[in-house]
Length: 326
Image (cartoon, rainbow, N blue to C red; front, side, top):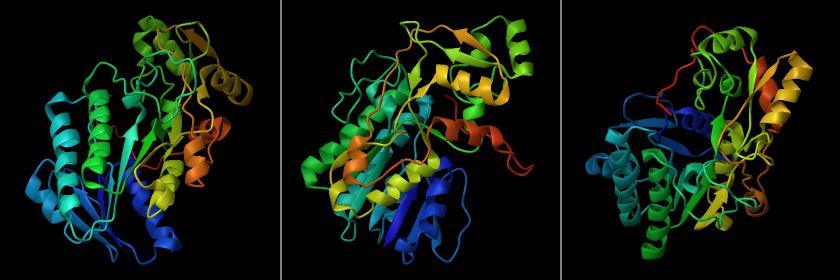
């Protein structure tokens, strides 16, 4: 088995490669990492291909002899690049895959941006049958186009594809910094812009956490997944006959409730919270299909997500780096 991994240097790519190499089920599997701006270390079972997936020749060469593709490469809110990477890149990958005599399975990591994230009201849990609804911006549109293109290639050419749709992916101390009122905030909202400047500085010093409220005034519920759980889902999908041409929600069993976060941090770390009003909508991604068909179960619940983020201590050679905006 030779797996081509795009986006190999990113958060999921690094964890996936390490997880697969450590899994005895894949002891004979080799990895080809397609790297563009950054690189991974080569090894006995890891080889490097270089270039952009927007380049057809790069993709064709990278797919030579490949049996599986795990497609992780993506762009965030970078309109100048997102269509080349997300749309053209995926098209060239699928074209080369369908023509390959060795190709067996194509796995795409999708995102909840394809179904609107927390931008739209939903009156029931979001299953895999939820319709595509991109919110404003280039990233959400790209995630819709990826899922539709993958499905259509399956219809056109009978490709063995699987899409794992993930919400916001956490590792290390990520979750702690999603709640920061400082310049070190990870992702959005950018809390310091939602309160007076002096208040933001005071909250940052004190470690005050935002209690985000939805459009109905209730604590917002928002979906997350830890990278370790996403990697275990990818490994569960590889060569799984029940994954053929299937879309799976891969997320925590329950969404993160900002009210529960505030209460847990007040109880365990004596941190204060402050209400932040919003026009966002609570939602609940249903992962029952992945649990049923893949036999997959996330390890991380709310308390584990919070506590692991607060306990994590970064070493000097592991700086917090955000590689893309958004």
